[in-house]
Amino acid sequence: MSHAASVTPCTPARPPLLPGALPLVGHALRLLDNPARFLTAAPAHGPLSRVRLGPLTATLVADPELTRQVLLDDVLFDKGGPLYDRIADVMGNGLLACPHARHRQQRRLLQPVFHKDRLPAHLDLMAAEITHGIAQWQPGQSLDMAAQAQTLTARAIVATLFDGTLTPATAASMVEDMSAITAGIYTHALLPAAYTRLPLPANRRYTRAQKRLRATLGRVIAAHRSRTTDHGAFLTLLTEPAPDTHPHPLSDKDISDQVITFFIAGMETTGNAFAWAAHHLAQDPALQQRVHAEAAALPRGPLTHAHLPGLEVTSRVVTETLRRYPPVWFLTRTVRRDTTLGGHPLNAGDTVVISAYLVQHLSSAHPRPQHFDPDRWSPPHSTPPAPGSLIPFGLGARKCIGDTLGMGELTLALATLTRRWKLTPATTTPVRYEKDIVIRPHNLHLRLQPHPSNSADT
Image (tube, rainbow, N blue to C red; front, side, top):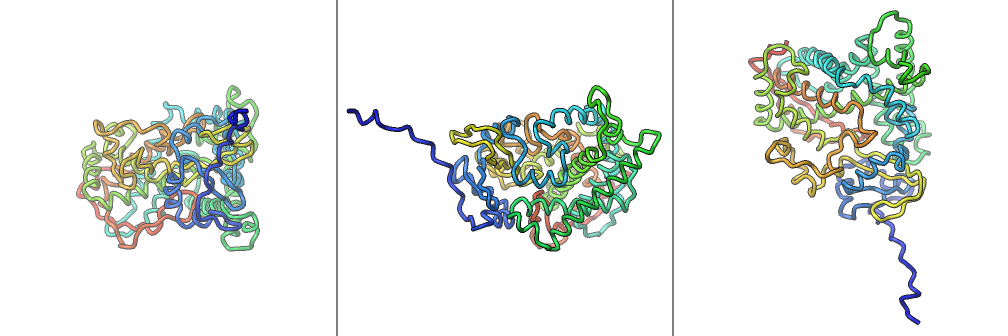
């Protein structure tokens, strides 16, 4: 009898477990200590590998095309897993954290706020707030740029979402709470559940910040409902939705979920990218001069959306910043039915980890990925990035609804900054990453000197 007839087809081997997992915590300590090093080392083990997040073993995707497949099929790879469980603790069923079953309806409800016809007014309002904030800085001042950037972008998002209805003290309180929340999300997603129940100061800050933020937003929403005039398109849309987009009024909890979602996204994503861009300009005087010259060549007066076409170099700096520093280290998805990915079987309920930081630092997709080079996006030298290798805002139906607004805001903010101020490092201490789910700089201190034309944008 032929031996070949009795051979059983081989079951595909499971992806390799990444080295360095510890009992109970798995790879959590490595991800907390140096997520950049951990994630960029993963592709050496193949396009798929296994990573332990506390007691949970997940599949880590280290290939642009496979990452693209996960992002485009949000029915099969739905929002879920330990990271989104923690995000949902904070944001509830807001647009970012809600499952597929609720996403399309929410997207239709919120889409009018981000319609292309509304973007110019949003951008001009944001730019005006940022210009006002930058004008308060003083020559020779040393700034904690990460903190200042968050303050600037918080002002901008408050002006857009709340139409300036928050007091400075309330806005400052919200910024403080957001910082405590995003730090807590990361550790709570990576470490065993027993950690979250310990009476540690960080855990108390995390819980207190969530409660205080919800209370603050409750007062904001109540005040808005009591008005007789429209004081903000975003809150008005949520409190008085049109029958064709959402026939039933939203509860205060639903509205609060959406407000938290957009406040975090608007403050964290834009603020951190703004700080990282300023860091690289301070490190590269020649590049900073190019950005300054471009902005200084524009007509005098505050910058607006109408100036965006003339800010080509600045726009490339923003794109390169988002390649080097996407909003978060990684995201998780839950597999909804048995399937395969990259030839490997996945079961319903499995967790998949995707990382924009990982795929955006692949040398096969971006030569010299650790080098900050805005000119890689300059024609004729640039070529379109491989599908799935440039995804700071995601892909598919769940791509960030505010991506165009964020890009425009960042470009105008950076041009306003460099038109008025020359940036230099204020310390020789290396800039590091905060231990946070968002990619935020730590110890980024920059010194300001005015340009001779610093009155151009006032």
